[in-house]
Structure formats: structure tokens, C-alpha cells
Length: 67
Image 1: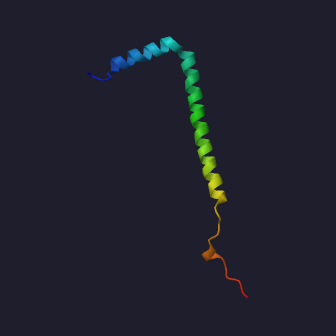
Image 2 (image 1 turned 90 degrees about the horizontal axis):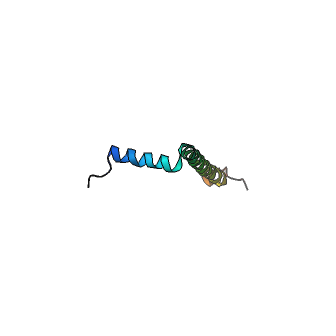
Image 3 (image 1 turned 90 degrees about the vertical axis):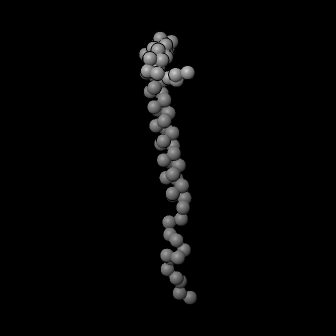
């Protein structure tokens, strides 16, 4: 077996365009991009929320109380 060559990839690409049409593929690409963007935003929001939940001052840095 040769594997995937440029010619085979072009034939598969042409078949996909014929089956789905360019408009459907454009819509699918936009939806996929929006999903990836939403996933990245959710991940960064989760990291931000985790940083807010951490205590900001370490106990060693707090001044000692006088008794």
C-alpha cells in the first residue's frame, strides 16, 4: 500500500464537496471554529475562577499580633 498521496486526497476532497456542497462545508467550518473558541473561553474562565478562590496572602507573610 502506498498510503495517502496528493491525488487521493484531492479525490476525497472533491467527493466531500460534491456530497455536502460548499455552503454546508462553510457553515460546518464556522460552527467548528465557534465551538473551539467557546471551549477556550470556558477553559480560561475556569482558570480565572480557580485563581480567585486561592487565598491571596500566605500565613508566613501576615504580621504577628501583639498580645
